[in-house]
Image 1 (cartoon, rainbow, N blue to C red):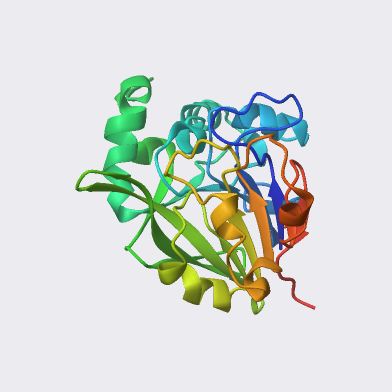
Image 2 (cartoon, one colour):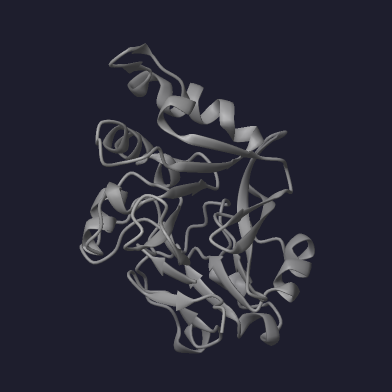
Length: 265
């Protein structure tokens, strides 16, 4: 099973060789839609995903399933494109949609309904465009021979309200990979997940002016060396990083980079 980063930038990235931090998981099993290729799971579906997929030589026809971590546009802004492209293409089946149960109503009512409700037969629903798998909070799902456990974590805090983001702990043939999604720095809560993972793909903010919604590199560098050495950073901004800080981690993911995250030998 492989994990390709379609992009490693933040929501507002404009670099021609980078895109928003969406990913693509390629299983070891053939697609049910096209047995000639391997099944693909899109991890988040942001507003520039059609361009980042094109960069990899892919289209909507190459996507079998999508996982949504939270509802910011760099993670769901491409869902209208994906849903309409597959719905009106006779060669496509409905993509599977894996999503936390708390987000099923809001992704339709607050993000997609205004533009997608009216279909060729009349008013439609989310289920007319995607085959929805609602995941209980802290639950898991199976796909492509791997288990994907969702890891709830705080992304934004405003007064008494919080926005949750649902990362993934992926167990593929005994290899565990933690994909944080967008998450505040919270080692007291995420420490056990760090310890359980063989590799960590971690949200990382690098701008001097902090937003408060992401883990900043100045905080991440304070983690124990054993954790940092298995940590690859993404979702960063294109600013200069001190060499000592840059080298303190396992690596910095580049757009288009592919990692093997567990394979049946």
